[in-house]
Length: 104
Length: 413
Image (tube, rainbow over all chains, first blue to last red):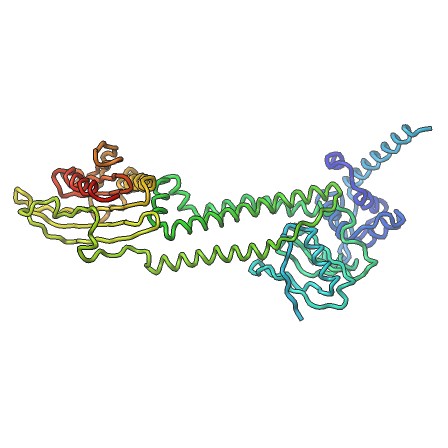
């Protein structure tokens, strides 16, 4: 699968994929979602966002569903959902490993 | 009012360029535009009271053509498109201090740079191919007549030697610059992918320096072309007897007076270069009455070359042998060029022969199918002197050579 061949997702990649879980999103909505979800810890610059959207489209993790003037809306594909899930499992495993190693 | 400033950074110094634009902005100068490749490294700015509060950022250009869409998205987030730099970067400006950075993580910037690195890799392949195409004749000669190239450089050294050096310098620049650019872009991408923000390079004003270097090289090539077509370095005709003060042979020398000789062509010319200060060329064609009363048309050609040293003479000798072999039909298609003679030229043999007067001597025999006797070309070297002798009239083909050898041995090397 794409997620394993590419290695771990970066934090911005992970949150951009997360933003599509419940509904289709456009660029500004993704930026707002990530900022809200992370409490402002992760802020997506336009260059970062546009580069990731382009990369995800190339890898068929997302697809464009609607173009309304300047507004372009994207949809998470099943491959994108799978890559997100793999990363989530990896992160959960990391947390579990850390918990088990935690000193009493 | 536009103010032009010298560009101090290299084009591949991503961080250095960005820092420089921001420094100019802090001093109240806003970038107007980025000049094309024809510019000399002077970048136009204009006074802008709002510039000190602005941020400038560069974005590596990928090969996608949807810049309009990207610029619109950036504009929504406070980043305005300014210009692009040589298809390498796009320049954006932001006047809103609250707007997020263009790239909030170096990893995404590295992804954008990936395609730029691919383009540079393609340039690494295409540039040598392009150069090979432009120099295809020279490359062909390098394989078929490698000894002829140094000979021609020695004989035309005044122009060919500097021209060859300039040409090699240009080729070196054309090949080394894409390699350097590729390596540095790849290093930058690698640093960004690891989350490291690259440091700005030293400011060495390489762009203006590169322009002036190119200007000097191109000016020289133009000078060379003008000199070549002006005829200054063409052969000069030999006029009076004082011009014939060099070892030579004529048709009259190899024929007894009783045979009579009517010359149809009688040319002597002279050329010089730094490395071969004396270069003579004689061509005579005439009709003689032979001992049995028959008339025969024949010719004699002689090239006499004196170089600065025996080593240079040996290089000329080897080039002359190779050039003659190429000319005289060791390749079958040479007969296609022999239209005027309307007969077939047959290459017989080429061999190095021993001769007491010469350090090296090569005898090349060939024959036209409508002639009874073979013709001969001698290419010889004696010290720093080289001769190329070709004749068809003498019954004894060694006779002109011996005559010439005597003169050579008396000449001062």
